[in-house]
Amino acid sequence: MYNNEVLSDVHFVVGRDITQQRIPAHKFVLSVGSAVFDAMFNGTLASDAAEIELPDVEPAAFLALLRFLYSDDVQIGPETVMTTLYTAKKYAVSALERHCVDFLKSNLGADNAFMLLTQARLFDEPQLAALCLDTIDKNTAESFNADGFTDVDLETLSVVLERDTLRIQEAKLFKAVLRWCEAECGRRQLSATANNKRIVLASALPLIRFPLMSVEEFAVGPAQSGILTDREVVSLFLYYTVNPKPPISFKDIPRSSMTGKERAVNRFRQFESRWGYSGTSDRIRFIVDRRIFVVGFGLYGSIHGPAEYEVNLQVLHTASGKVCGSNVTRFSCDGSCYTFRVMFKEPVEILPNTSYTASTTLKGPDSYYGTKGLKRVSIDCSSESKVTFQFTYAAGNNNGTSVEDGQIPEILFYT
Image (cartoon, one colour):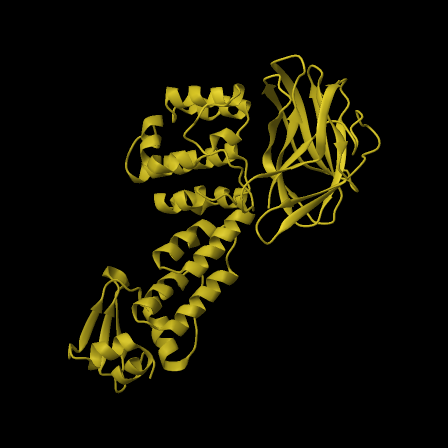
């Protein structure tokens, strides 16, 4: 009976223009399989028209719907799955809808995550949207480089840029957003000037976390792009170079697969002076009992008043020597004994019960240092969980830092 004129009592004119098809069907079969068709044919406002026009439905998708209603046979592919999902939702055929969503889940990847996220939001499929966002989190750079990224709407772009869980350097994220701006200017028939890029980006601009870039990345990229105002450029340069840092309109929370707020483990109970630097790294090994993300170190400042240090931060996998995260940067201190935050470009994932080495190589004046160190420190992360750090001496190329005293007093992390 499927797509068969024999005993058919209704026809659907599906699609538009040259793709339009006239498809026969049987009211009884359709009414049994769909509450929408039942109301259409048997409800109080039922129509007795022998021919029903459906210009918003693709013929291939409508035939897939009928095939399912007549025989429980599912025939969907990459080219028809979205239109079939739309049709299944339109006629409340939930079983076919689930088949479409399952098909999308099984074919979801970095190359189509943005495209499917747009469709999932359009068709109100929160579970599929969550899976798309998770894929983008895990494969951020690949997802932003995919062809479909520049086709997303502004609202979908904003949903992604808001996330703390993206795994990408902010400078690379900014370059991807500029590509989107150029495509959006084209869609709006605007020339791709810096001012028009700012206009089309609109409320999404503050979602780019410029403070996470190094001053060099900011200087050669966003500062020269023209997309920021002179006031914004100046305020960000001040943010990079002075302490205390001025207020800015851009978030400085690192992005990664993290939850909760930033925490610091302090492994010393006192501080003394002085600690010198001769080009050798200060190192300390640590193990944690649950997965965390290290975002930076707290380091002691100068005993000689305000000063600036050059520093190379690293986290290494102790057994293999592999560098898990690093950053070469500068930090300024005001000459107090307080610690100063020095951050990695990207959060560093730390696995439980695995030995890592925290390393800093500083160039600058003598500083304060910590004493009466702790071998074991537990930090409360919530009312129900905590993270326990265990510290051990890192032998070899070490400037003298140990469990008992030295530099790297704080490790900054998220759970």
